[in-house]
Length: 271
Length: 251
Image (cartoon, each protein chain N blue to C red):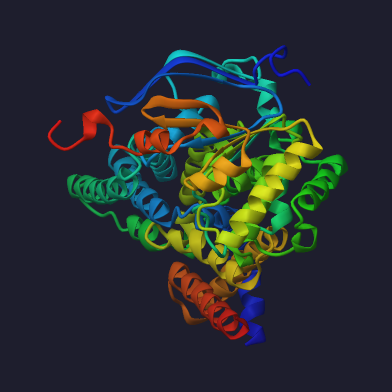
């Protein structure tokens, strides 16, 4: 067992997967606190599926798939936000529409691309091998961006997710924060999908925050706890994926879910 | 203090407001002077919340003129911190990770400013505000674990923490039992007596409003009454809560 762990860490691509995974896990888990408090889980589901449409289009026209994912996910996030700011009930429906349309576009683009598109499987369900050396500077940069934005506007975001009306009356730029959150969501999704895939990236954006919420009602503890859960889930999940040779997306999600279940049961016993 | 000589804290002239093409407020004019406790009454859909939200600059555009603390609502800027507001419905999650003191600290936003962290001065004023409403020993309790009346006190502390000149409350006694209602109104009377605060509060409890406020404004789309509490006769009340002519059956 120890031999296999030593062997895992001696592999260049595994070390890269761990570094990338920790960055992705930390930024998703930080954001997940606000995703859970502002109830953006379904939005993140919609945006991540849109990212898949972007990847397929990028493959079709021959540009970097990550770029396609980023453009599509930011575009969809802004579209969902724009529509739902006008009519509040539309958020839910518009996500359902955008989610299906972008998956349909993705399949359509794939159909147009004759020949093999096997690399796309990795974008759907994640792959350890997909994190390239050239990805790391981007991952580091975008993780720093996510942390910086969330830390600088923490007070405003906290007020906004607690009570939007009061925040607006106090002069907090509520609309800008909403769109800012959506853009950060899109950025982290395009980061996370390389590792865990478009279908499963929502788990990274929801489970750590939801798990931490069961364990504490103090926001000062909640945020670091959520980040720790996200990072730990990625490390354990990646290790498991290597040892039993399964998709890293699946094993990370299963590990995170077990943690969620444990926290849920523990909180039930306390109250 | 000579109310007649000082500038009104709220000055509304010929205010009309439409929402989705429907007239919500029609040609409403009234003034509120400094250091008054004013009750705002009217039926559901009579325009009370819309009036408060136009005063706060949340709802626009409107016809007519509004001056709050001498400024138009769209240009409150720094004066925003001089207005404390307690909204009607608090639809926060019972499990939301916020303690009473966290909720009050949010109210320091106008002083602290955008993207800056509150300092020791703001944190001290949080305890001061909690003390004003008698909630200092509940400071570290999660907001969702407090009773309706206690939560309402915390939200009043949130509105008071920026040391406002004007406090606006939208149905602060909704969802609070009779005893809590009495104690809330005693709290407001005491706050007014202790400081230069001007208070405007919406309530459905007409008898409570009549016995505890200085003046009453009654709205049912049109302004039905604005004057001393003693002038609110049963006939006026009947007129206020009578269906508006345009909405009456057969209209």
